[in-house]
Image (cartoon, rainbow, N blue to C red; front, side, top):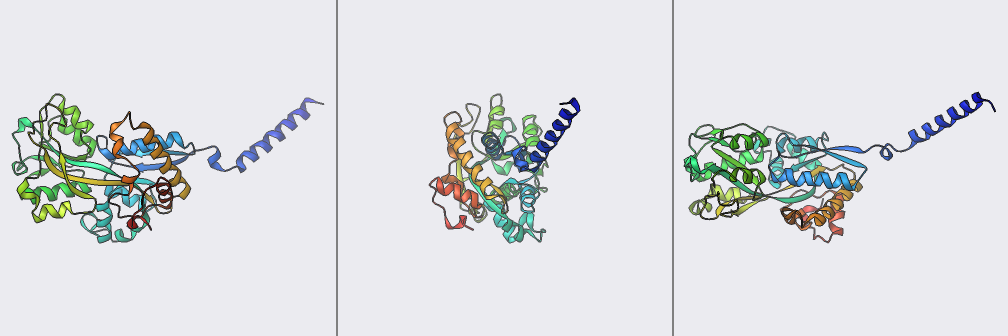
Length: 343
């Protein structure tokens, strides 16, 4: 047999093999790339959703989630609802505001329809609102922030609106009039506070927060709270009573010896979650939900903060139906599913 015959046969075989490979499903050779948006480093959602991403990327070779930690949650939910992104952090209060076309969604005509395109993958406790100041500032209460540079949260975000309303309810102070509401993202704000370029730094996060723990190593810090005589006022109760919100305690000493609070601080707690588009593949969401909670259980002892991330907490304060894949996974995990979680 001639070399040319061998070459022709080899070429034909290679061509046939290439055709067979091309005919196979794309996912057999390439991961499906997915985009997840969250808050910046130093926040609880970033920590939880980074963990979700790492667990899923390791456990499910068909998928690769890429994390985006810029921008505000209120913009992220619109992107997911429109099918421009795959996952994001959201919260019960955001869903309520979208349905009512209120607050930051007031001028978005399609908000009530867009929220119908969203589905919950899982909820988790975001933590409590920290209102931090340096002890050297002399600020010991909210009514002393007049004329100060204050980070409420990224402009247009739910945290910004919450803190703006809290300072108004407790101290009667208006953002932009009585104090400067500094426009920064989460990461930049943490750095600005650390550098002394902010007087007041607000962050809803689990305690102890890594970012604030780092600051408290070398600086005395104090956390401002809601005074007992203001807790039952109409303005504060409206905040406490919002979907996913409640009154909570930030313990004295949780940040070590450099936390100067003599007593526990009363503040707000909040539940958030991971959401996706209603058209997301059911089996994909099912696999991801199961893999995540299996990974969390495995890592529980080495990462104590994960103990609050449980299948039962996945439906806490829920006001947006679960995605069918998440519903199936959580049902298999023995979670009692509330009616509000069913489509």
